[in-house]
Image (cartoon, rainbow, N blue to C red; front, side, top):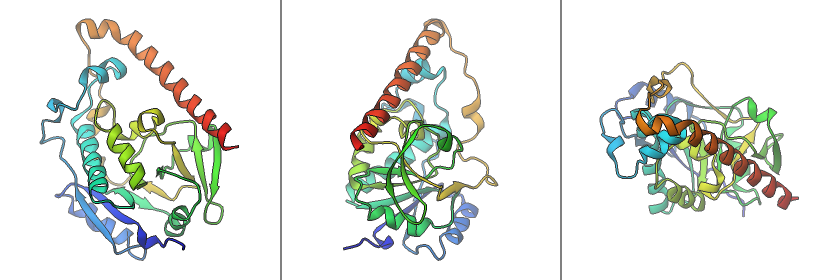
Length: 260
């Protein structure tokens, strides 16, 4: 029996004060689905999330040279809270959107085709980054029209739109217990999530660049390390980049080889 698009629960992560964004999302979803729910985001600027026991600031600084910003922490904790809800409420499939997401042509029929795909996916990121087309990729399933489900070797940023199964949510839930990178970076680390990096191409979602980033520009500032962390950083950063790249690409090629 085919699964209809209505089997998907749609959540929109949005700060409660963002009325303009919420109104815009309601308009974007007209004709696509009436079954959506706003999920109140956690305001990283108001919460002292950098002091949370799950935030591993030392690892973050040694691997990236700076702490996560308040906005990045708020975004991570918001997505984690929603993933926990999906697991706890036993929701079979959920589309998660940030409140600046744009749903492109054929979003609904392509997602419906994904629901009925025989490929055992866990979560699929809806990305528009140009480098997806340039980097190593392999097709794992055909969807609607010329849309393909792809395994990619790269790890683009962006968590503005993705779909997750209940099984995939449980994997993300486990991987999100320890926090030391943005949530979209985590989604590009298959060995931490124990899931493949999958996406759909051509893209079926984008983000609205007319809205300012709710995460803020603080994440682009360079923090100045001091003491032994400053001395160790060139080595820890270099080792991390080499190992992370090798593991990600190795995972991609092993999964691709097994698929064929």
